[in-house]
Image 1 (cartoon, rainbow, N blue to C red):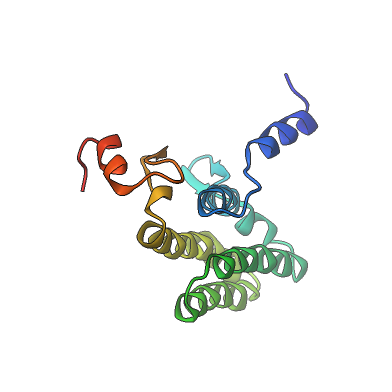
Image 2 (image 1 turned 120 degrees about the vertical axis):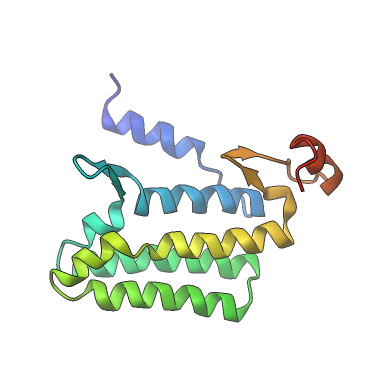
Length: 160
């Protein structure tokens, strides 16, 4: 069995470090999974991420989770997304932060309101429209960077 340091290094080596849309998409999907769906709570079978767990720590937890949510917005800005989209994403993080700061009520809210998932959905819509080569279907890459849309259609059996 690998120790936690080896597990972390193996996971980190799989994350792309490029600035191309495909690498950004993979990084954002990994971060969203970590923040919103990292663990399954036994008994209720509901996925929970670091956002809800770290948010249990008063003040510091809220600051840390807000910073991680802001990183998603920063990556979206680097992709060239519109100010309206960035504002919607900032509003999601702001609502999560504001209500998450209320003791007990905010902790319950963090389990239900997944601002990072909402923001990833906004980013994916943008990438699917402006960078179709980054599309994924059921967790599989549909096209490689640099391919055109005809190749994308062939890869998914004519899916439109």
